[in-house]
Image (cartoon, rainbow, N blue to C red; front, side):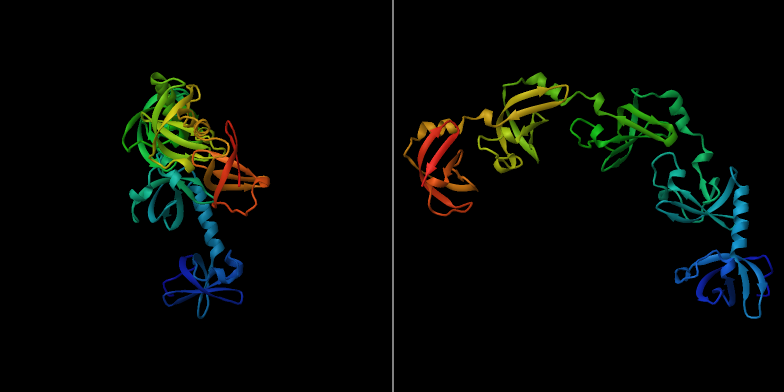
Length: 387
């Protein structure tokens, strides 16, 4: 205590609340911080908090300190640094930026204010590093490193326009796309939907690609680019080899709500559920498995919308016609109950379905039960049975 004098700045950890303020220690020295001079809430949440304050006076057993006075001094000092380049020391490295010390005053550099590129700052700094920064927000004590550097976005603003085609290097890959370096420290964002026409990220780090600028916003430091607009549409490539009506072989690669994707000569085309089978309501994932090969008929090739539609049902013989060739009214058949409605039930006979009206059966059935009955009507895709 003998080394301290009025006006010195001290640091200590708040240990407890007492009437009128807070108490803490630094070594053997006890500090009392009156509530009126603290700028803190008088509750348990401050226990354990490290604070800095100025020595105000000495009591018999403790040192009275003033945190508000210290904060006012800091505010004035920080304000005096506005726009100036200062030397600082990195005291802590966080995911969202750097905590720095400027002559005993703490400040913060957000990660967005370190580099113009999307770079992980944690790989470039260590605690104790001496750096230079410039104050950009005195109230929050926020500093910037990149504001001291030439702004590459000025070059973007002057030399690039929407629609320009430029070479770029893939600098960072994410789940939702990639960032590309256009060569002057600026990175453009390439959304996964803009990488190619398949919506698959087929890029690799360091790869040089050609992109087209679709949006420039230097104020917010945002640049969006596309690659797929410079690539030939798969539907156009498909149209070079096939036309509507052709029968082609393909492989089931993916199921979606409306059907499935089929790969034909490396090109992904759409198989809608309505073109899967002659059975009403049957879906692609009920008929096929991933990797299945089958023949399909090309229904539509739309190069403008980059859409190719194929059909499985149009590439095979109509099973209802085949049933009519091989069966007559009165024949006995067997199948499984597929689903039951208010007016009857539908029976799966393999490649076709048949209706059994409520008036034509007496026993009770559940979905999945076997059913034996007679054919009472064959009319196109309408087959009726009775028990």
